[in-house]
Amino acid sequence: MLVRQTGDRTQIAILEDNILVEHYVNRSSNISYVGNVYLGKVQNVLPSMEAAFVDIGKGRNAVLYAGEVNWDESGLSDNKERKIERVLKTGQSVLVQVTKDPIGQKGARLTSQISLPGRYLVYVPGGGMSGISRRLPDSERNRLKDVLKDLITDEEGVIVRTAAEGASEDELTRDVVRLKAQWEDIKKKSETTSTKAPSLLYGEPDMTIRVIRDIFNEDFNKMTVQGADAWDDIQNYLGHIAPELMAKVEKWTGSKDVFTEHRVDEQLAKALDRKVFLPSGGSLVIDRTEAMVVIDVNTGKFIGKGGNLEETVTKNNLEAAEEIARQLRLRDLGGIIVIDFIDMILESNREQVLRRLVECLGRDRTKHQVAEVTSLGLVQMTRKRVGQGLIEAFSTTCDNCGGRGIHVHMEPVDKKKLDREITPTTEVELDTPEESPEPIAEAKDESEEARPRFGRRRRRAASSGVLTPKS
Image (cartoon, rainbow, N blue to C red):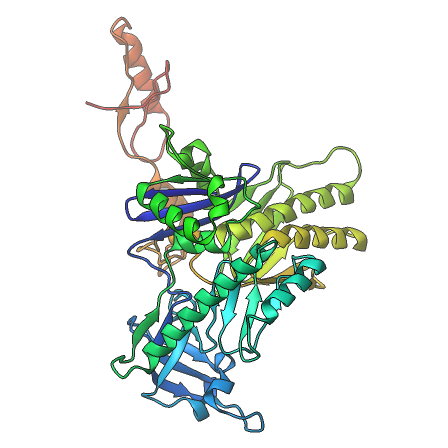
């Protein structure tokens, strides 16, 4: 893990075998709201949409869907029909937590089922959900169940992280006690008459601490930090929460930038391209639409070595499946994703490619689901979208075309005329050395003028090919 702080911007890169697989970026002027707990004020309830718009003090109203309402907390018994207009009224104060940042024209997504993340587990005060990471072995899951049985009441719930593997009973106890204290503080603030909606009751730490809390564990070889403020924050956090990981943290002292030294900037630039080249010569084309992300797989220059067409296509698709899993994590693509692999005849080959994709996605911590191959040979999948992706972080919409990538004219376009208009019109002359005789230059001028060409006349230097403007 590499952490680079420059000015008000902090970037975190996660490398596997020196290959960039995940990237996080944040500015102090662009803070994420995910995880924050607010006392919001209901602005409007739409029964037909089964949703309510809630003011959390961020300008644009956030949306709370009926599926995210805590019905038990609202006092609605099971035998009554669960409708959002029964529990929420305009002007009412409601305790909510942000689950998704505003994206485009959509406001933030909310839930009234509060959950507080810790180092080893996520504490759910209202109960309703409990679980242990499936990545842990059965023996470890049973041990954690026994430890947490005495720490959590029946009205509470916990979701145990993978980082809890090997954690002692004291470490788990400290995590639970700290999270319970946070919840009591939130509850006290929400019930205080001096707290007026909308207001922030609990704010998640900045991105650096949040990523380290959720991701950094014993599986990492090391963490390299560039930036004095980031170094101090990380030392203070890990020294208090996970001192055993301090041995893996080092401060960058090199003369070069830490991202440049590890070629992160170079890999980021490639990740911003529409086209991704595969090691064997194939390529991926990744396009984003309003409804979904579409990925097309091409063989490109990959012609295989021996075998037949089916074998060549399968090898290319297997390589593409590995790269697609990496690109989804790196670009943080979310929503509906459709992958158009190259057609394969054998069912066994199609299943092999699908297994490879699912296997490579096993490292992706973001919730996702891969569906079966459709009758058209397309692979459909979904991936949870939480915040802005890589493209949103490093781009702005074009003012001229509005992001479409084309200019629309009111009349059909004359392609030949357009080609003439875009021909460079800068007049250049031959950069003739002093010892070259003048008549040769004049003869070249006449031959140049005799050639028909569009636009104004251009001449190229015969010796170096460099074009120089006419003085």
